[in-house]
Length: 415
Image (tube, rainbow, N blue to C red; front, side, top):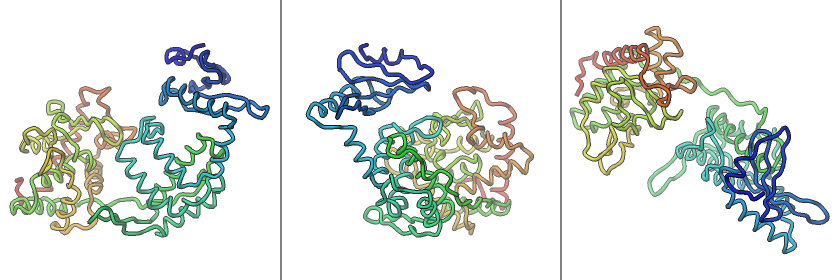
């Protein structure tokens, strides 16, 4: 058959995998798996044996892209080469560092899926690159992938946990990145390494994942929450710094929004006016950590939003002080405000945890709290819900009202 997009997509899976070859290019075919996955291949004979080279999966690759790749492979065969053997030799000599580079290239091209079968976000890739460059490559980069063992990976976990890769790294002319070790870093980094090694299996570099069964250290549970008195100190610090022109209005509004909504830092930084549904008492986030998400918000949040300035031409609720982007320095401003309030160890996540804890104090269930926070498995998506449940709105209203009252309890004015 002539392999075209329509023809390939019409191929139905069977109980066992099978091949369909192209009429126009001998040796170019597509393998259909029982799962429905379709993989392009180039098949030829060399040394009296039939050899087959995987080109890539249908979807990420178009038929024409795969045909062009097959034409190159079969051309190499005509010149006396054996591409399958060459690839096997290269796979055997592949280092962990080279595998990481290949993994990142494939991820950049959208060929490696993250949560929910979706391509990884740019922010996730940024973190992945940091873990690869600062932990995986320094400790395992020179090892051959085919020789990596489970004890090697277990030792890697111990080394990261012990801080063997901890350092202060220069970024640019004046910037720096603090690379930390610890249980949490070790657990998250070995999770990434396991994903990279799963990619190696899909590329036929190895057949068994040496990260499987490796013991991950338990990370410290973050239990820090603000008391009513600490909320009061925070509210007072915000008001004083705003009144004294020590902070921009975007910083004051951003910290208050974090406290009153339980949203993640990035969700508030990127929040756009088009995502504020005042009539529905919610934020319809287009791009949260869990994808599109609807968050119920209380009247205190809407009142705060109503009092904010709208920068002409900017879609952002918190526009940049200069330029047309968002106010991306909210994390730095948050740190300065916490110093002024004499609150140690308080981050954006602390405010999120405090929101959830306040909801728990008010007697709301875990499922209601999860929906308000946009937790995976509890997220209310804008695709399916147009009108939020009145219970969720009432819950968000009560929690925001309790926190707003605590923020002003010392007499701090809402500037």
